[in-house]
Length: 196
Image (cartoon, rainbow, N blue to C red; front, side, top):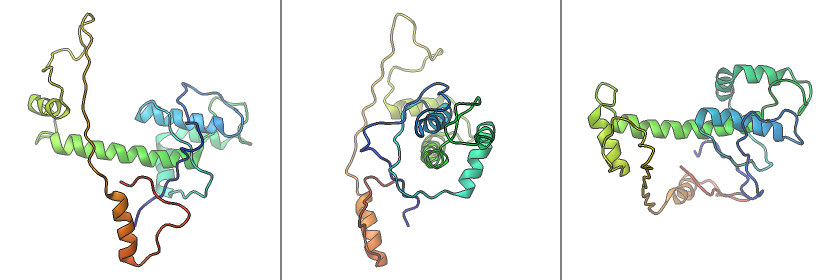
């Protein structure tokens, strides 16, 4: 009913930072987390991401196959390592459960962005012309007008502010209502903080 239940550990007091080409063979599982975040950041944007709580995790075979197709060299290298966190080889370990969960998150964001941008604003022929570009500028509040060169002149820095207004969220209420409607006992030792 709810799909994957990801338990991110925001209470640990740290995030998995983005490091360019992280070290091989760090203490504990840091090498695999840093390497996994490096791969995600190169594909989906450079940022820190949260660790997981220490609980059982489920993995999807199709998602594992997709990860292997996206990063075949890194998975082949990680598979040849005899022990975790060895300080040998070009590529370090991968944290497969963490990587697959965040790939799921990032691909979901990618799909939502595609639906919003392409399906909502795309032209009939699947291309963005001047009209579609102006529509997205208006929607995002970019009022400085079209420019033949997207880079601002060096003497005039370009600063754009987009105001985002958040309405009340009822998605968590719908989760509880869904459980009650199916006659399923609600949450016990865990509870969702956010639901799409």
